[in-house]
Length: 333
Ligand SMILES: [Zn+2]
Ligand SMILES: [Zn+2]
Image 1: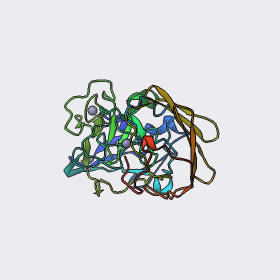
Image 2 (image 1 turned 180 degrees about the vertical axis):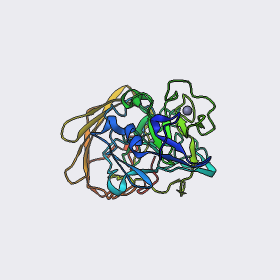
Image 3 (image 1 turned 90 degrees about the vertical axis):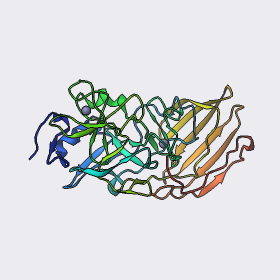
């Protein structure tokens, strides 16, 4: 039986001091505003969230420390969906995002976009402070997979008052800067969570580190430093190296699976135009500040992290910018 407690919006009931139960019908409300882009389902144990990883808002603009990755759709569907438990339990030893979880998702936003640890895979860089994130707190990772690294507070109006902006993969909801009733969030622990009197444990967004859940208060299986069961990304090209001095200034989603990203480098406008191919690959056209272009075409990857990366054809490389592809199959971020 489910109760509507102080956290009515999240449909939580406390089963005991350390165990909770969420009503999947009420959890589904978090995602309802994005029903066209996000699908949800559940079973006895888990709640599942499916998306193609691309939000409706503008991506990439505002990034000052750019890794040269771009957003391409990801197959977060079927058995590659996000999932979190409907009956979360407190862990004996909560996991801090300062010590682990530097790869992969730690939460999923109401619009189906994964949220990663604010600290990236080097274990020390705060992506937000380093200028790696766009105006919505996201960027594209090594598999050209778009994800956030901070709480998606920009979703608050769309999601609706009192509903969580995201769900942590340990099964607890993530609210914005305030409580569901609009009052200030007080007494947060080091993971940005707390238990309201009579309500279930939950996390909050903050305007400083950890920005989102700073780890997991709930039980969750972590393997090789990441949440063990979570969607795999599908990369179609070797990952790229950071381009020092570049600022992403424009991003457009054109028709028929075509995208165009513009960036400023040494006061010159460069661009990356790319088109998704019917078979799952993509064609990239890189245009430099002098208008010179080169083309790279990649076949479809396999649906796993750092997937297949067979390059079909490649134009002349620009040596001066060190456009060397990275190692295949590397950790995401
Ligand atoms: Zn709270
Ligand atoms: Zn990232």
